[in-house]
Amino acid sequence: MALNYPAWGGSENLDLALKTASTNIDYTFYTFSCGMDFDSIIDIITLLNCEVEQIILIIVPSFIFLLQEKAKTLGYDLPLHKLRYMVVGKFFPEHFRINLQHKSQILAEEPFLYSFYGSTETTTLGAESLPSICMRKVLAQNPLFAESLGFYESIPALFHFSSQDTFIEVKEEGILVTKWQSTPLFRYFLGDKVNLYAWRDLKQEFLKVAVDYDISEKLLSIIKNSSDYLPDILALEGRSDKCLILGGVNIYQDSLNTIIRSQELEDILTGIYYAKIIYHENGQQALKLALETKKLLMCKEKKIYTHS
Image (cartoon, rainbow, N blue to C red; front, side, top):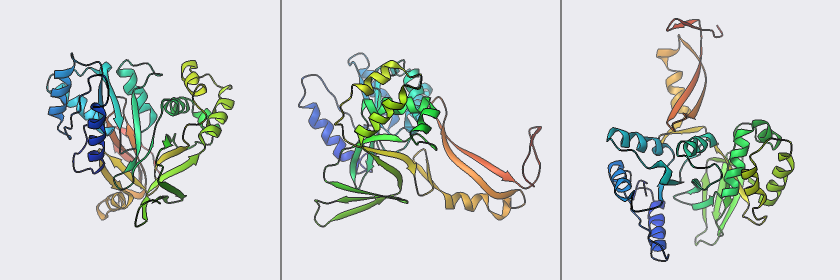
């Protein structure tokens, strides 16, 4: 478990669940809760590499790249072909998973990286399945296909709703989560952009449109052969509160406004900008900014043309 233990409340429940599972299965299953001590994580992976068939890292997506870079600085090559991932805490673009899986030399249709959705207060609300992951991969690789299903701005993460004691209300500014069996009644607001879909309907529409596109038969087969009775889908498209998350740090629009529209920059910038988090092919995160300037600027002998 490469999570901020015990600062993140959900890690305690997850730690207990994994250690309980390790006592109830027939094969050898070790559980280590290292927190975010990368040195310890790398030591354990290196020591157990020859002893185990698979190593599952429970981690946030942005730390995967940092872990790999730390291993390189220490002179270690992580056994990427043995590593599998359970990730929590962040929305990530699908090409991040596709590139990481390709780098690890794992076939696209094999189980590799699963994501969970929830919060410390609400606990787990949803989890990906192999069919929902394959569906997202297909949509990410075929933008026109995604648009034909109504996904224009980004490809949502497709989580199966898995919380039996929870009622969810989708609102424009986020979702309201009600734990209806709690006493007193528990209600919590999440500033995430989420839509709800019946899995059976989404699957049928997906397969209906798929005939018009060149899609991997192996991925399509997994979706086709999946049960119609899997839990319905929470489709997460990102934050609705204009908040970006970079390396575990929240970057709010108000903070960017303060900097970009500061007095020091008012002679250069108009104050209009576009910001997004991007993932490079190696998994590293970056903040991408497009800034509108008030006049022609010279930058490394390149002309930047803007509105005056």
